[in-house]
Length: 342
Image (cartoon, helix red, strand yellow):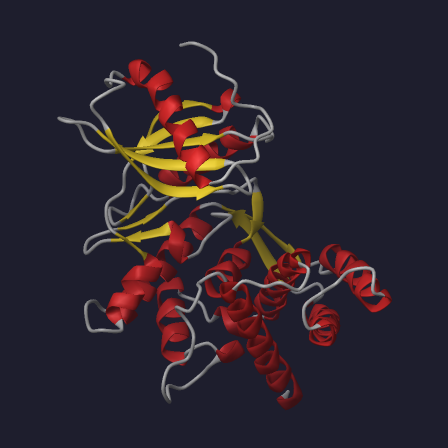
């Protein structure tokens, strides 16, 4: 296979990334026994910020596959570790026929390229949206998501120890100081500083509490969960090693777009999340995570991270970013209200 220049700086929009992926496919197709031509290609994800293209490729008489190429600067070992995490998950989930991961068909981690089996179905976000119209069982979907997380976490459990919030709080204090000084422009700075203060109080409540380290997904949210009637598949594993499983759960609740925005007069639970959704997920997970002070702290840590992502916008938030900021503020209001009742 001829060497192409993949590991190079590239600042490109989606159209350029899509074109680069097409050229990349012509380069690798022969190695997996596919014709370079006579294939249809459809972009699934084009991320100019990381110069990543994820493309579905369909041949005339073959099953569809997914080509993922990274075209910008990246750590050469990143893809290798992501693929290792996927294979570890396959081993852990082997006893569960309905909890699966994609198959790795071919990879060249040194150049940031992999080909995996295509997983048909709806994303978790789309499946929940359909369920609101009666086209699916929302409670069942969320229960299955919780069950997937539980199987992954408990199958890869490593050790239990006292939780140490200090390793998170140092960065929080530094960022808060810069926001107070005006060195960092943060949307709704007073509310952000309120979150920082909440984190320190939540950290005191969970210091030295029992906390388990395990293998995690690393990017567990509704867009990385593919739902069909008989199985649930997680894609895009990002686990770099052992971590707290509750971080997967925090990401699940906070990186869901409008999937968990309250509608009508439904009852609300922890952090203003719909109570029925929370109960369904935790039923599958087998644990009332929201009652664990370690989870509460890590949930707030995820909020902090999402808020910090908005700092580089210069105050010019896109509509989706404004909506996310409103959600974060609403979650903070609910956390602080619950704290006052303790």
